[in-house]
Amino acid sequence: MDFELTEHQKKIQNSVREFIRSEFDKDKIREWDQTHTFPREIWKKAAQSGFIGVHFPQEYGGRGTGITENILVVEELCRGDSGVGVALSLVDFSSEVVLRFGTPEQKTKYLIPVTKGEFISGGGYTEPDHGSDITLLFTTASKQGDSYVINGTKTFTTNGTIADFFIVLCQADPDAKPPYRGQTTLIVEKGTRGFTATELSGKMGIRMTSTAQLSFNDVHVPLANLLGAENRGFYQVLEFFDESRIEIAAQALGIAQGAFDRALSHARERSQFGRKLADFQMTQHKLADMATKVETARLLTYKAAWNYDQGRIDPKLTSMAKMHAGRTAVEVTDEAVQILGGYGCLAEYDVERFYRDAKIMEIYEGTKEIQKNTIASALIGKGK
Ligand SMILES: Cc1cc2nc3c(=O)[nH]c(=O)nc-3n(C[C@H](O)[C@H](O)[C@H](O)COP(=O)(O)OP(=O)(O)OC[C@H]3O[C@@H](n4cnc5c(N)ncnc54)[C@H](O)[C@@H]3O)c2cc1C
Image (tube, rainbow, N blue to C red; front, top):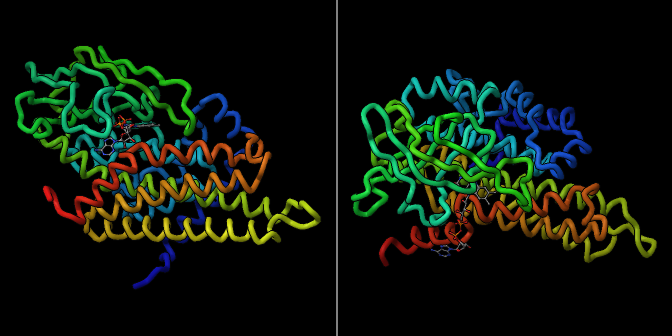
């Protein structure tokens, strides 16, 4: 057993820290959060620095690493800032479905621009009537001549109004029993006739990321846009979640660590009753609890990533990491705001943004309740 990062992993981690020091401007970040603006300029620079799709093979513009290195990048970006970090780490959302199941042509066409910072990707799985349960979908795809024709609505789609292409999970065989055996994933490019994206306004957190409702009204996509095998879409998406949920755990871990860093430095600087806040035993115990939670979230997240890189796909461990890191982010950001007192509620002190951004970690990519169901069914056994 070896808990030490390799020299290469430390180098990647340090290069992200250096990037944050030179590129993350606090005033601009607060403005982007308040105006719900995607940080386009930083995204381009992050791609040029090789931080987008670090785990993609070199032939598709990545660094050919495992997902552990991507986890380290995501953690550091979100530690640097929760809003920018989440936005950057999601610009390639769902590209892994292309990576794992796409043809060489699809990988060349879509993944190279993603790693270069030219394309943003998105994935439409959730529908207005099907969120936690996507075993049945109302978005349909039917084969007509040389096209699939898509009709329906997806909602809460990350990057909805800014993505260049989407992976869309459709009910292709309406008679399949159970219905998920008739689901197919298709690639839909922005600008395709009949496709529209409408931003969902008023989001509590991750405001630098677009979240939209997608409408498909007789959208024709070529047969070549089939991703993977027909009627295997549901299984492909579940496999994708085994990977992407570890990335969400890393976002949550970075958010928790970032909030802890800010609370610690405030506790060291601020005095009340003639003493630094850090001199009160109550504050010391809060910091000790926060640091312990962050460290356990890190251990679980790194273990899940390492396991994945060993080729051992373990949905139970992935769900444990996502659930635990998500809860840690919520609890640690809450305590960070508390340690900053009234200042914690002001945008100028940043932790209020970390607090708002943390909650979504327990909702998207499967809620904490759904993670618990996955863990329990692995422990107890299906059908028992
Ligand atoms: C900011 C944001 C970005 C998102 N990005 C994407 C995206 O890019 N692509 C995409 O497809 N989706 C995306 N989502 C959607 C997200 O994955 C869903 O919101 C989530 O899966 C929950 O679905 P729902 O909102 O319909 O809630 P529901 O499924 O209606 O659940 C409501 C509550 O009931 C609980 N519940 C439901 N079923 C069970 C059960 N069997 N046992 C116990 N409790 C249960 C849930 O845990 C939850 O607490 C995003 C959501 C948000 C908020």
